[in-house]
Length: 467
Image (cartoon, rainbow, N blue to C red):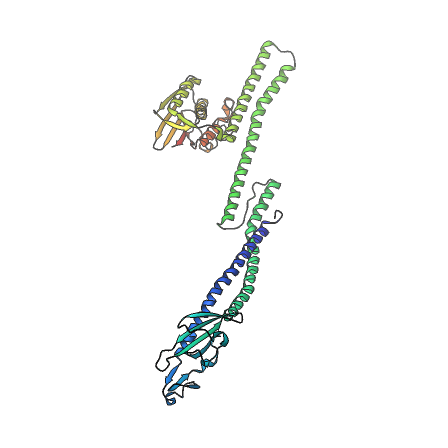
């Protein structure tokens, strides 16, 4: 079974189920039909005898017998005549009918088992069973009560063999039709399984081509439809799109990281080569070491930020979330960062009381720190930064505003990318990963981060949390 295709496995299981169904169908047909046919035999026996009751009439003289009727027999009985239909001479639906006197003497008709029934008492309107020569017979008696027919009985006899004949016919028909239907169903099931497996083969082929060729732009096309296979193909296409996006993002990240690290490494290498070309003065050595130290710190910040953002992406679930007093957290961070007073910029804050949210305090502190640091970096001299925390209906809003250089409209959607810096003239003051971390932290908390900015007037970053 392990080496078989899914199509063949489905067909084999389908065939096995059909065979089991056919087997039990045979049992049911045999059981039910046997009962139904035996009941039909008995009903037919009663109906035939009752019909013959209506065919017997008594006349005092033979002149009363209608010569136009298809009656060929008039039997002398007591003081008159019995008019008997000639159907008594023949079996009707294999039912034999006879006219008997009270002492069980056959007056007219037929009896296939005279010896067996010679001692069988009459039982009016009841079905009796009797065995004769290994065969079961049903007997039905009717006492005649019409004027002139007193003391006469009609006895009908039928063999269960009549049912055996019908049963054999049904069995033969079942033995022919059911296997034929099974064969047609198996062939149809095999073809249908192949048709159903065709989209899966396309999915497999597309995945194989992507795996071998690395073409993440390839998509699975199986035509229009809304069934489970089309939904599966759509999910695979969505997965390929995310893989392509993730691959492009990682490739861009690798490129940007290499580019960002190349500059300080190049500066350090060049500075070392220049300094070691000949003997330098203490001032020159000190200046070279300061340059190397400055570039080393830049590399250290960049590496640390890259590690942090990688941890955010790969270990988002590892950050424990708990009830955080955002009022206290924002107030504490702002009080600490207000001491920076870089380039004469002042920091103010307006915070509502008793705002609690379930989150990670370390990450939320990092988010606010990065936003305020970004405002310091791109704010104007002697400018202002305003931090606001408030609850609005079912959301919590944290906003950081500055009156600095602002961000152009076409760049506002790019600033959350890794290593992107809107103002390249200030690129040395940051790593270009701060706002990327802000975006990742917002995603981890199920929130959103937006920016509203006017070039030359300042920017407002708004972080929204939903309760």
